[in-house]
Image: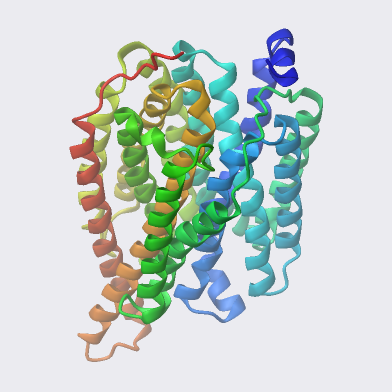
Length: 478
């Protein structure tokens, strides 16, 4: 037995302080994914760029996560929990400080990449640590609390930033995050313990290169589609190169004795269904998080402050529901949550695909809030159930893959939704006699948002089909 493992067996694990450290750090990290969405309309004017360029502040963040998170499974087995926690927060703090001071679009985009490095290290570490320190029968409730981070933070991002923008400049979105990150760092320095087992597997440079090109190429290709069009050689070649690299990466992992990312996790059917369920749900979350702020401000002509208030009930209820769904999961399993959750999402996305400039604010609040209830019924139960089926030695690989594909799905969902919205908006304007009339901006954007939500509806239907195959998972090796 290794010295690390011996120490792990003898030390008393203080689960609550460790969980609190991760909750604070993870919340701010994931809040950053969508915090700027409410400011995008202003930033387009401030930096004099178009909507397809400004989306890189979100998709660039997700692209970095998609590249880094696969490597995190390896890092967790090489470095101690405290080391990775401190380094991840250091990146988050530096990136947030640069963002708060950013004078240009380029500097702001760079700061987003640095922030994402911190989040990319934090997310898999957080999940892996929770799986190590909590037994299976307590994981549903614990993952429910994690749902406050995974779903509540991105959902509440536009709301809080809208409230900030109502009174301050966009820089304050980052200034307000900074003290919370510092608190999380200080709290972690005092309470974080080393709980993971250090095995130091062989580092395979080729696997890292193939993983980076694969996940990075796919996210970049989808993200570039809004700017260059789906028929662009850049878009097509990026996606093809990404897919080929992922295929080569996968083949290499199966041939290695100590793979960088052990793809045998996909031999566990509930893990595979859990990954796919999370994939489609996060696409819905991220596409909605970028579409609704634009719709509320451009089509319903609301200020960022009021638009933030409109999205507040859904974000709050999402957070409240997560611990509740966690306890239901522990008692009854995933089916009673996941299937009804997808049905609720489908119904609400159909309603959202019919919104116009005449839709009432109350209707939007109700639709968004109920959509978030459906999301909370799917996300954490499906994720927890999938990870529960894995043996302990595959936790780092399972959490890395789950988080990687989640971020890739977020980038794809954001890019596809924005592309559909922009294309539909142009089609709507081209049919008008005077497309340059400013009064047509609101109705044209509403038409684009309608079609983008139809995309979300189709994705949710795929999720519902998957949910019929889900059942309670327990690992025989635990």
